[in-house]
Amino acid sequence: MKKIIILICFIASIQNAYAQNTTTDSLQAILVNTTKPIDRFTIINKIMETTGFSSGYIDTTSCIEMLKIAQQLKNDSLLATAYNWIGSNFGRNQGNNIAALEYYFKAIPLAEKAKDMRRLSSVYFDISGVYFNLQNNEAGLKYARKGWENLPDKSHPLYDFMLAQYQRGVSTYYILTNQPDSALRYSLPMTETSRRAKSLLFEFNSMHLNGAAYAKANEKELADVYFRKALAVLDSIRSTQGILRFGINYIPFLLANNRLADAKVQAVRLLNFGEELGINDLKLAGAGYMRQVFDSLQNRDSAYYYARMEAEFNARIFSQNNINKTQALAFNEQIRLIEDEAKKTEQALQRKQNIQYALLALGIIIFVILFLALSRRHITNTKLIQFLGVVALLVVFEFLNLLLHPLLERITHHNPILMLLALVCIAALLVPLHHKLEKWATHKLVEKNKTIRLAAAKKTIEELEKK
Image (tube, rainbow, N blue to C red; front, side):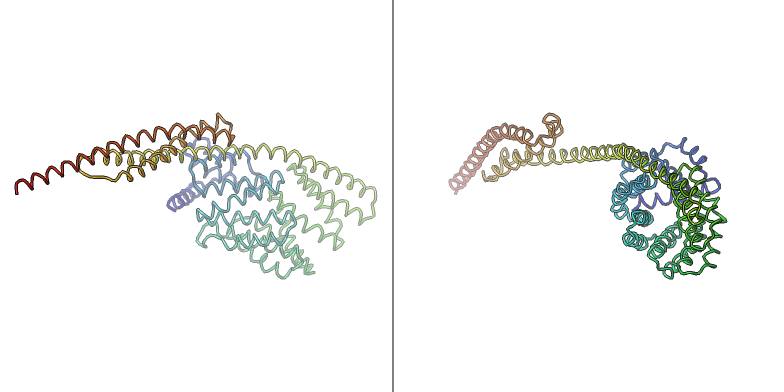
């Protein structure tokens, strides 16, 4: 808990220090001269938030470094944050929703263990977004509510930022399921929440969600008012998902109201954004809506042209998805190697501690046996020596097992049969040695007991003779 408090205080100090200049370039310049791992992690996280929340792009190299630092510091909250970004990388950059969910779910127990509610709620909201992308609306709603249940305290500086994500998720669900009145109960308050959070992107989202909800309710004038408000800030938005969602909500409204000229303008805007940002999903949506516009105008040649363009973009997306899958495999392998290295380091440390415990236990047992066998004052039961001898044998065997296990794994290539045979051979060498030592200790013990009894008898006889 102390580490988490220190981390939160440090993040707050970083935010205050860079309040006047939080551009990516300035943060990158600061990062170059930063060597302390926790400081690097915090600055990288700030850079990721700046770029991720504006453009949606998640840097793969930064994800790798964050995971390495988190593993190095053995901090559950940092690990949850790293896995959160890795999941977003798979989901947003590569369109690999399954891999995204895998890493999001890895982050949950770590955030729970660290009691990091800000991160826990963030992961749940990201999972909700993935399920909406997969058109599993019920699961999307389920995880949006889980995110709400785990919101950080209202005093947290990012409380409104997280609350806006909940309002966005639930209103999206009700719009997709044709429940506009329920959607408005969340999308309307989201506008004020976004302003408190000082997030233009979320405010933009709330505007077009309000427009979509009023459109579903057949409140055309109100829908148009909110869509125009969103349209006024559209040029300032660099989020691919935000632009795409706006187009998906607004252009069908224009087509349904036979505003073909406006629909054409917005479809062309999607195409241009797609070209500018290099995003095939935007170009595909733009081409599809252009086809619908020309179908409505009964311009078959132009409709056919955009239908072919739509098919071409579909093919590009399919091809890009295959490339993304290949890149995802390489990225996933990097993550696996980092995790394996962390596990090996942890196992080596645990083995070292176990060896120390075994040596300590063996030393105590040997001391007790020697004390009982060689002490000239106390009569001792031989069965106790035999029992301690068996315990010592087991401790020695466990000690050798811990010490030689890595070597045996390399020699036998993790073959369980060969490892078992090797351990049996070790036991076969230990048992005769144990018998010899036990026989020596027992012999010494018998001699000692005889000496003690003889001395006691002599003392008794002397006392009787004096009487």
